[in-house]
Amino acid sequence: MAKQISLREFQQGLAQRLREAQTEAEPTSRLGVQAGSGNWLLKLDDAGEMLPLPEFSSVPLTQPWYLGLANIRGVLASVVDFAAFMGGEQTVRTPDCRLLLIAERFHSFSGLLISRMLGLKNVQTMQPAEKATERSWIGAAYRDEDGRLWHELDIGALVAHDDFLQVGA
Image 1 (tube, one colour):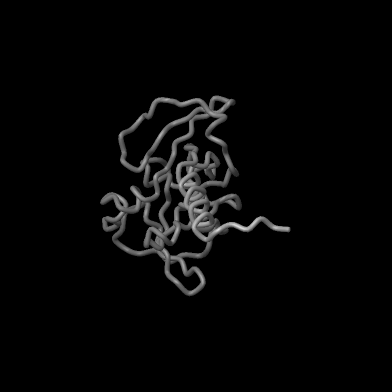
Image 2 (cartoon, rainbow, N blue to C red):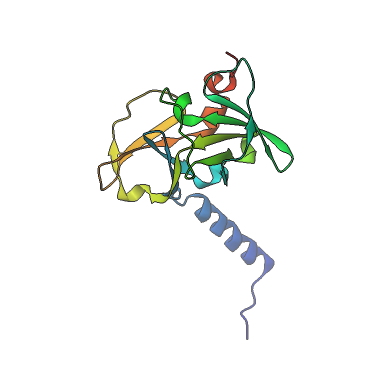
C-alpha cells in the first residue's frame, strides 16, 4: 500500500527538489561547429536548428559577411557567413556547410553559415586555454585532447552586438 503524505509534506518535498535542480551544475555538453578555420562551442539551447544550406537572396549594399535572406518554411532569415564576420575568408560552400539557425528565444531570426558540424563536445574533457580576444560574444577558450583550440560562442551577446546588427556597407 502506498505511503500517504499530507499536501504540505508533498509541497515541501517538491519545493526542495526544485531548489536542488536549480543549483545543479550547468550541462557540459556543447555543440561543436567549425567556421572557417575556427572551432566553436555553443550551448545546446542557443542553437535553434541545423539545416543544409538553403538558397538565399543577396541584399545589395551590405557587409561582405552578410549573405542575404533565406526562406525557412515561409519566414525570412538573415544569413551571416560567420567565418567572414570574424575577419576570416569567405566560407567556401561545400556539401558539409550548414545553416545554424539561432534559437527563437533570442528574437533574431537569423542563421550562421558554418563550414561543418562537429557533433557534441564535452568541455569537462578539455583543458582551459587563454582567450585570444576580448570580443563580448566569445566566451571561454579550451584545448581538446588533440590540442585543437575551441571557443565558446555566446549567441545572446552576438545577436545583441552592434557589429552583428549593422549589416549595411
